[in-house]
Length: 223
Image (cartoon, rainbow, N blue to C red; front, side):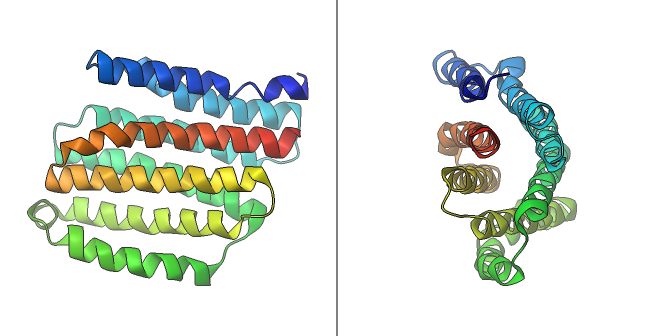
């Protein structure tokens, strides 16, 4: 496949994201297969770049796996009827974060100092804003899952910041992780405080994360 054609591939998940958001906000419905096509096409883009251009860099497979687990997490979030589904959804997203983190570490390294600089304020905020809420007190599994997820989210954000260089692709990847963290926090506010207005921003940020990662990968490995 021509390298210039690869630059247009992220338009595919962008198309599915626009259709999914239109159906969600105009038709008031969620069409699951369209929603998950965003992550699925992003995974396919990572695998295409890996197989066609950099078969020696197997870390791209980690990104593809991360997208697959994010699909699993999102499916549980869409059928959210109890704390059990919420914990399973968090677990899926936790594993997705872990694979993104591994991808970044294998390619750019890790800064423990930067991780603590980010993690400590987030941890303090978590205990002040979320940990003491009735839902967290009543369900320890949910509390532990949220804390583990916060930890891996901060590690991923710190590593993305550590990986930033003068390239556009590295800035796009950092922006993607920032969108993901913001989406996660809005979900936390929705589930903890019943702030339903957060629904208007959660999915756009979630889709933006996937699409920006796809753009980052294509720009970094094919230009």
